[in-house]
Figure 1: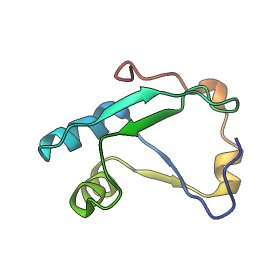
Figure 2: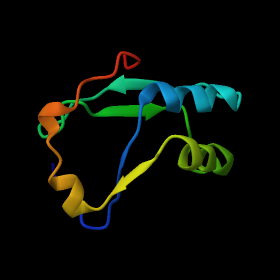
Figure 3: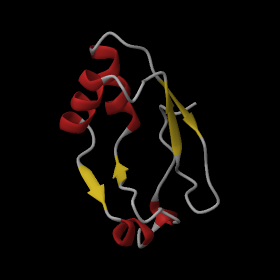
Amino acid sequence: MDVKPKACFCVAKVAEICAVIAGAGKAAKAVYHPTDDNLAHAGLYGVQAEDAEIMALLADETWAEFLTKVDADSLPLSDCPMSQEVS
């Protein structure tokens, strides 16, 4: 996986992300967006990075695993399936 040096990679379950966002009264959609080096990649649409309340909820409730570039680059991506909640 090609994670940029200053980036942080998060592992989360799409169903949990969408439930937290819906619980905050917002609508979001996860769209299957595979990349060459991560076939399980999905994009999250409908949430603005400036929405501090949603970002705090996601950080506290769904993004349980944060990986550095080195850790993310060593993930066994062949074991990453596409979530059923992703369209």
